Image (cartoon, each protein chain N blue to C red):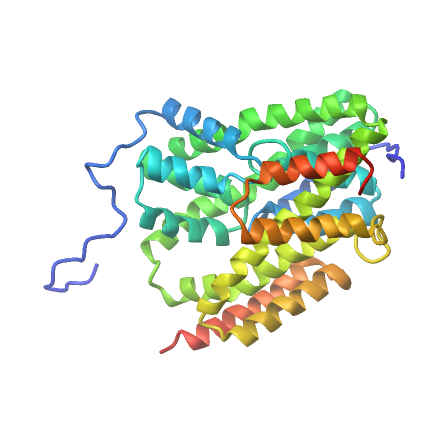
Length: 196
Length: 201
């Protein structure tokens, strides 16, 4: 699937910005948990990114040091590049990163102060406990969508060696203390050799 | 505070005066930059090791307390955590300094990586390598979810109900592709109500 070629007006940039602002407030359990929603919006609904570009952005950010949220910068970067210029790509980075960081940061700053003073409060504890199952479901759904390349009928949905690699990684990282870098290196090697 | 005659209990997380603390905003920025640069595929483990064990800016208990809030709040967990640690020491400037530290240099690095990747993206080996790394990255996210699922056995909501909530959430999000906001409103709301009622006693 080739990268789409886009013509972006100011309202498209605004849509992108507003969408990331909303996702920011929904990113309980980390920005990565909204990945499935970003994929639905950017790839399936708007067609601003190809599935390959989307998956590559996540993979590049994961294999680079730093917080996982930086994949959002790469999504913005690629949307900008699809409109045809490097300055648009940098604009995309700024729009997506400010969008994903600003609301959650302002909100968390305020709430963290408040929750810190009121951590025995029933509402605070109910929220922490009640959200836990959903936070886990969000992480597993994200893993599923990335592994299948976009859900049922996705790009990799019949590539079973790739699935196997995902499943093995999940079990190894879950059950052992092996450093993630070894798994990333193994994945890169298997991919480069054409095994997966 | 109420007019209780009892002395107020010591606030558990006030800063221990003997404990080392970041010397300046620059120290915060540099420390979090270095922490971020050591974290491949997630920074949490490095933050814990550096802030608690090496620098001793906070105790393990304080760390766990802050982490539970950072994790449940919207926004990237480690960014939230960095911000909260910065706040404890230098208020808002500390928050911004720690946040800038954890993001700036890694952001520049990842953009450089994207530029390099663009040069070689047509090579089948490079595409294959990235496909392999993407599969590993998906596995890492699943592993994070699985690790966190262990905590469900200590949840006030019974484990069977927790599992049902998580499984329903997974099906709605991954298979039926229901928008996230709706799922949060429905299942998150349900979870909070269930937890609220169980916490009554």
